[in-house]
Image 1: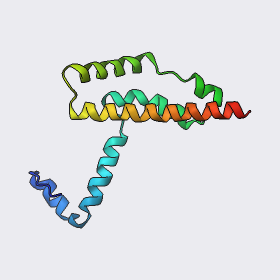
Image 2: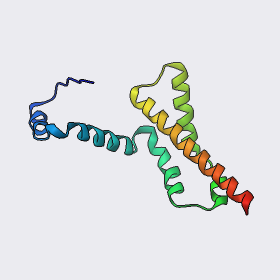
Image 3: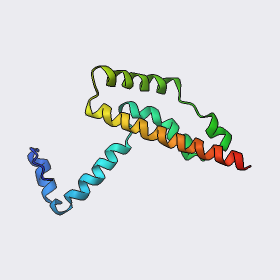
Image 4: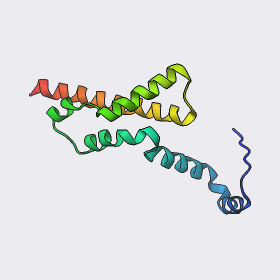
Length: 117
């Protein structure tokens, strides 16, 4: 794919110094951008931090979204149905779906572990 950009001269001269690394710069820049809590994704950080704390089986099974997270998700679902989402909101929605997938996997594994005990 070929991309053309209009950028300020200062940025152009900085990029020129790294022209052989543009693919890596874009890759890592996008990864960093997606990793930062932005907009509605910030509400998911509690869930991710909880999972990263290596909770017990029982704690995983009791995990529920916070009231604010539910409000955020309902808002984005409603907007998706009515006016449609911006690109940023679509990215947030995809992040919600991915975290929900991770939580479901954690709960499934917790249930399996509970049945073995």
